[in-house]
Every structure is written in structure tokens, then in C-alpha cells.
Image (cartoon, rainbow, N blue to C red):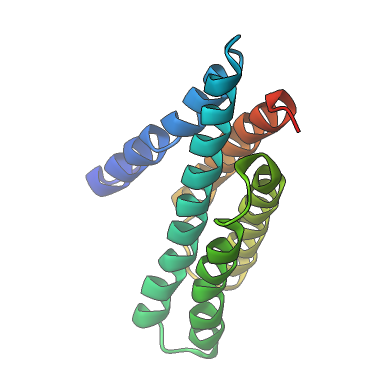
Length: 146
């Protein structure tokens, strides 16, 4: 059974997927300016989420004093460092990188889940949210003119 805080986290996670889905819908507009805006939204929001996903590991590392906490600290800053560079690319160019970063973040989360006490509910949530984000970003990437 999920606690109330887990339910809130799940709700907030899915609310956080709205900008991804909205950008995918926007990319079907007939106006090229709106399509480019959808790429901007998807790319920049995706980078913010990648940074957020890394920062979760900083918090988990502070609560865990085992050997894996050093790895968590190291990993936690990597998404922000990469996102800082990707942020300066054109959104149409950065979408593929953002998709890759989201998949890498998911993979790292799953590796830590297998080796540490990352909650099972969080892993299940990450599966759905990552899939939603990747599909939405892929739609935008296909729709944006190169």
C-alpha cells in the first residue's frame, strides 16, 4: 500500500509530464513558429528534468554513507554538467541528446535500484514517466524542421 506522500509524488510526477505531452501536441500545429516553440519547450524542459533526476541522487547520497554514496554524488552532478552544454544548442539539434540523457538517467536509476534501497514505487513511476517523455520528445523531434 502506498503512503500519502508516495501518492503525492506520483501525482506530481505525472503533472510534471504535462509539458512533454503539450509540446508533442503543439508540434502538430500548422504554424512553423509554434512547431519551433514546441521544440524549445520540449528541449529546455527536458534539460531541467535531466538536472532534477541527477539531483535526486545527491539527496540519496546524503542519506546513505556506504560506498555507493560516492558514486551517487559523482553521478548527481553529471546531468547538470552535460545539460549546461546542451542548453546552448539549437532545440531542434538538442532534442535527440535530451532523449538520450533521459534514457541514460533511467538506466542509472535502474542500476541503483537493483543495488540499493531505492523505493520500488519510484522505479515503477520512472518507467512510465520516462516512456512518456521519450515518446513526446521523439514526436517533437520528428515534427521539427531541420
